[in-house]
Length: 117
Image (tube, rainbow, N blue to C red):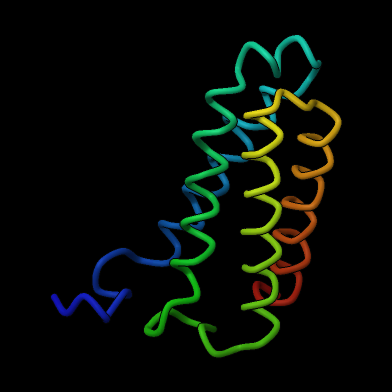
């Protein structure tokens, strides 16, 4: 397949499902306390990196809404929060991690409200 045709490589809904899994099944369970977060920081960092990459992928030409300003802004917010979460995990900064996850989930929720209906 043509590398520029992102839709042919991976279905966007599959990417969205993977992003949801990252947040709900890996990141959220790592944040009930600072102690758990410190112990699972590598897992959080790994998933944060993945989310940052996927947030860029879902706005590539060929995907639905790649040219919609609102969708692109939500993806940008998700990417920025994911990078903040990565930094917080690397620095073992629990309050910053919780803040970043809050921004991530907010960008996802508002995007779903606007684009899922």
